Each structure stands twice: as C-alpha cells, then as structure tokens.
Amino acid sequence: MKKKTNSEMIIDTLRDGNALRSPDITAKVSEAAGKEIKIQDVASFLAKLSNSEKCDLGYFISKKKTDRGYEYSLVKEASGLTPEQTYDLTRKTGKDRFTLEEAVKKFPALKKHVKAAPAKMMRTRKLAGGAGKTVSLAHKSADVSDAAFKDIVASFLQEISFQGGLNVNVNLTIQFKGLG
Image (tube, one colour):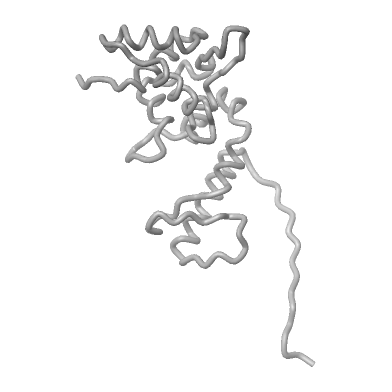
C-alpha cells in the first residue's frame, strides 16, 4: 500500500463530513501521518483546495467564516465520491483522471455546486497535439489547425451535453465582393 501524501490526508479528513477549522485538520493529519504537520502547510493547501479557480474539488468544499476562523467541509452531495475520485479532482492532468464533468455526470446532485464551472471550462481548452498551447474560444482570429479546431468543437459539444442541451439563434451576414 502506498503512503498517502499530506494533501491526500487533508482530503481524507474533509471526507469525514465534519466542518473543521485549520487547527483541527492539522491535528488529525498529524495524527494520521505519525509526525507533526505545520499548520501553515495545511492552511496553504486548504486555500488552494477550496478555490474552484485552482482546483475542481473547490466546487465541493464548503468554506464558512465563523467568529473563530474558517470552517471547511466537503458538501454532503460529494460523499459518494471515492477517495481516488476526490484526489483526482485536485489534479489538472493525468491519464484516466476522474474529471469534474464525470463527477457531475455520475452524481447529478453535484451540479448545483458547479455554478461558475461552465464559463471557466469554456474560457480555455488545451489543444491535443498543440504543444501545450491554450486557445481562447472567445478570440475571433486565432489560427488553429483542422485537428485543433475539431478538438475545440468536440470540447464545445461535450460542454453542451454537460449543460443539458443548447438553444441556438443564428445571425448570418453574407458579403459579395467583385459584383457590380
């Protein structure tokens, strides 16, 4: 059995379903690790973990301000996720990684927590074979190859499916040059 990382132990602590503050999480992680873990390391990871702009799991982390600081917990709808699925939602890359789209498809109750995700997902997409280039879908004059364009369209169609459908209004303007 592989040894868990501090990050995985923090996630395991949140998976218990209890609302906990950083010192409580630090104590539990230190106990699980069998060594002292610094509270600033836990706080730093919690800041990243609860931010949906940096980490997809952030959509499912509840962060509530109390008079004694922030309390963190995993939303109850995410309790069906396996530990591995939960860890995968913290990763941006990886072969056979469990994605945000798969999580919402498998556990539809999670969708209500993913309010800002569609705009984030549509803002940029990594292109397959594009050597790490990111193409903005809002940019009108991006030069892209046929394969890259197909990947963008496929991503767009996947997003439409994820959202539950699409209503389309089309405005078409045609200009003829050289006549008259």
